Length: 137
Image (cartoon, rainbow, N blue to C red):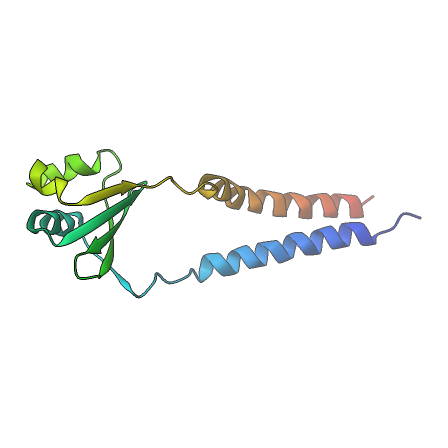
């Protein structure tokens, strides 16, 4: 008689992973409290008046460091470059030279994690279907 413990362990482990994913999806981590959110217009104004020391760019996210030590987060349009958007807001080339702009590599596993989270429900329901079909034999 074959052992029935292996399919049960598989089903319970898939169920546990699904519950963990649902928990982290329902209760996302709050953003850090030490940084505020500003608009791209406020970033352009800060570059224009020299109050921004450094801008770190990762995909369409900006991390802005001010001269007084504060930090803020901003988002930009992903269809245009940062310098192009800042120039659209009236920032000159001389003002841009006074600000350090650093382009960071995008997160390495970001796209893969999104794909896995999208496939997880299919794996979960497929395993339940497989379990139910095997029980009817």
